[in-house]
Image (cartoon, rainbow, N blue to C red; front, top):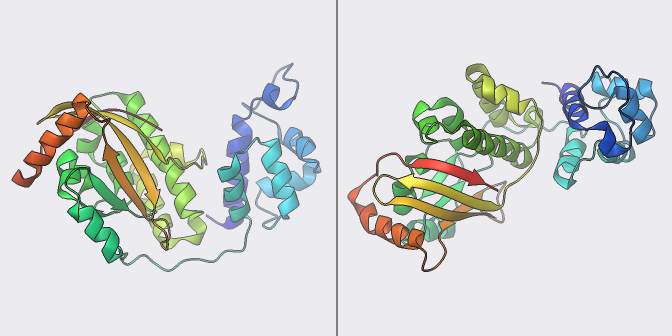
Length: 288
């Protein structure tokens, strides 16, 4: 997708999601669009309707920063989505193809030496780069060499981990899609991302639908409720910590509240981790 097309698609997707009454626009009468009309966005942003139409049609690739800020206000974008909008309008600098990624020795040693918490390093494409034995025992999704986004959409075994709870799966999938946009940036600037998006779009209609929403958001942490076949139900917190000096690598840590039953279950799982990979974990709920 060209930069102009990406910019236009982003504007259309967010225009469709803005309720007129939320931005002071009268919603009386019959409306043919789910959100704002083009001319309403143009008026809110202080632009001519003709110029805004050119932006949506991809005929103006490089609007000024002032125009982009005005559009962000009109579309009620948050800080992350506004930054992404500016990125879409900057000149294209395509990155080279992805051929592996190095994890610093200190980070690798820290992850592999931890026996009390599941620890995983992922890159901005959600490839699993390093994981300790407890993380592997918690879920086979954490095995190095896999891609979490691909697994969520294309691996039936991973989908089955949600016990048929489509709403829980949808929340996780939407969070991951929005997160990879925020971390990796526009697909037109990143060959690896374009390849991953192309593969998932070809094989998953659900991914295509979520990708077309153009949501941008990072999830620094949250809570996951899971049922493990060896130690039972656990409620775990997880934290995503950015690794400095890298392009989007994150350290993912799971932990339980002290003296909680889940902490005892996690300790039991740590004792069992040396025996090899565990059966598939049943994931019940995840929220940011």
